[in-house]
Length: 111
Length: 111
Image (cartoon, rainbow over all chains, first blue to last red):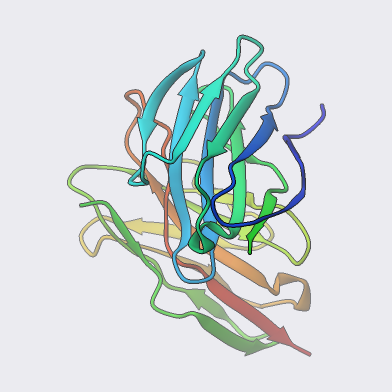
């Protein structure tokens, strides 16, 4: 079984721009979660999707949004980028309250 | 409030020595507790979950509800155990798979 894949792996953007990150879960997994990882704050929950519905959302501003498609693939979007948005964004998928499998992450750098 | 505390950012031991990584949590209820590990240049992966009560790679973790702790232990550390270790909690089954992570402990096992 192929693991969770995330594209792109690296991104460099400038302040004020917007960015879209993509996550393809393991085949058959319908739950996708997103996390932001930074040296200062560690791993913080962004949002969670199940069958195209957002099931839970973390404490992030409205500039952070996401969605899930019918094939369970998920995207997250960050608008009006700020320097503090520089982070590793991790996606995880599961088959329903079981082990969550993490992707390699997308490293976003905001200049 | 849901919180996971890992008091040690860094932990260094010699090969063959016992190791204990501490984790304390705050949650009103009975969450699921996990240990995740991230080896250098690898993705985050599940090491242990408390409901499994199993030993993985020689590691064990006991949930102490009275002390709200879930410390990770290994009697004889190996150099390949060097990694970042994250303790995490998840609400009991009921709709959300959101993980709340501690800030991690970097374990270094010296030869």
